[in-house]
Length: 257
Image 1 (cartoon, rainbow, N blue to C red):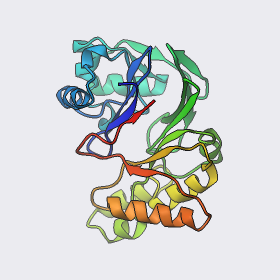
Image 2 (image 1 turned 30 degrees about the vertical axis):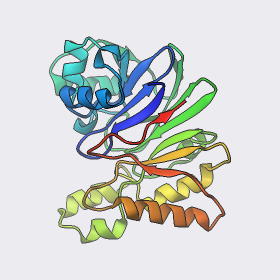
Image 3 (image 1 turned 90 degrees about the horizontal axis):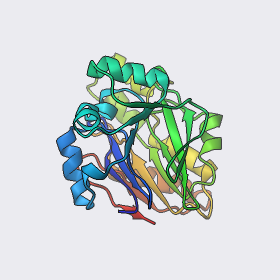
Image 4 (image 1 turned 90 degrees about the vertical axis):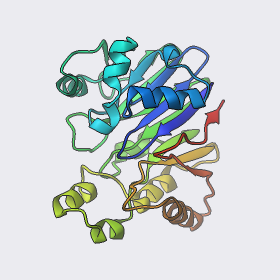
């Protein structure tokens, strides 16, 4: 498949496929190796054909499948040095790493990655924009608030995978313990539907073809609420974007190009 497709998105695991004429990669591998293999098969991609895994940060829901993929399938892992340390601590052994520096672009086949820093509760978490075939793709989840750098980097994207994690009232009224509520709502947690909408307002343009709303909380958000909140906010500014959900438990709508 040429294009990209969120295979899973949320606290139970995150993994996105990206395929071009020269490369087939995964961004994060937060499911079991078996689950990733099965989900790839649904979009007619073999796990044997995956050339690399690019990791945003070392939380469990982003690296769960690395042990299988990195060692059994011998797939190289791209990460920055701090994330690599966290991966080694988690796996107890060292995969075949390709280390990049946050803030510095790197090339892999026909993909040009621009990793940039985001606020989250790990040592050096990143989001990415990726340029390929004249397109700019943005992948940005797991951030506690929207920085000016995030706004700058996500401008001019043609496709965007963006976090819309929660509704603040649902978080506050949930049965979650207070420390977890504080983490989610804090500056190193996750952004809300409203914050996602405001970010989209600042980066929307006529060339933005599709936005995936990602990393939705199963307890403190719903698909309908995320779509309604964001579309209504954008409509106030005369902005109409194609919004779709990046699902947790099923393969999402693929984007082909």
